[in-house]
Image (cartoon, rainbow, N blue to C red):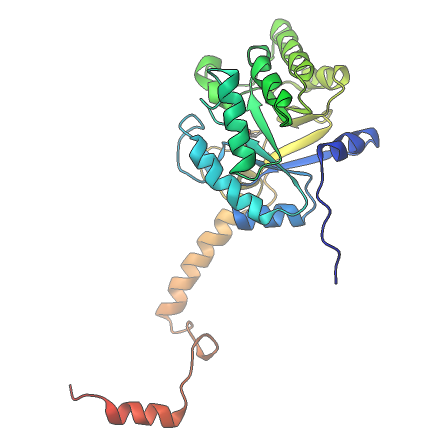
Length: 286
Ligand code: KIV
């Protein structure tokens, strides 16, 4: 019998970086895709609030609720055996107070089955991150393009492009490291800014649109396998075209049924001849 996969911990991520290996994180939000990601050997599955756009049909992550996140987290938790499960805290779950942050981080772990939580924001949110870490739940930070606050940022825009904005990102990253975060996502920032942050921080950086110098890379599964026909960011590389694959299958299904190619004997169930004859004998008159 094959050995059960070993459950990874946040210490495995630090060990990977120390060995000069890259960290892999993929956003997946349901049972089958989480199984695929887990079995592929990805280190961290992010139950991201991008679920709002990829699976729930919202135009942004803003409306996503804690209950919606928990529903998806539970499905992912049932699927994943080895990856670290990172539960995203949605807009409103930690913004008002450290108490909210602890309460919702606890819900994500107890009710959602996540191992750790992620929250967006820099210096301003360091007290919330610190409170959650002190309460015993590891926190992954997320700075740069933080889609929950896209109105404040002026939309889905690359962040940190000026010297002062780059410096602010470094300050944000250091504040989150001081708060006790075990890793930090850098989203949509210039590669050179990400390199500086990666060099200055002791905790691993996980980039998404932040160039090749980060300690790890994050992609959203729906973007990378083409399961999403709406906006796909420039930084998301597409490794497969599942949208066309599924569309073609749906067209083929209809053609097949119309042309008598489906269902055939191998898709149908049979009845013994004597039972069939008996059924015919007992049929009520029409
Ligand atoms: O929700 C998400 O998938 C994320 C990643 C883009 C980092 O936050």
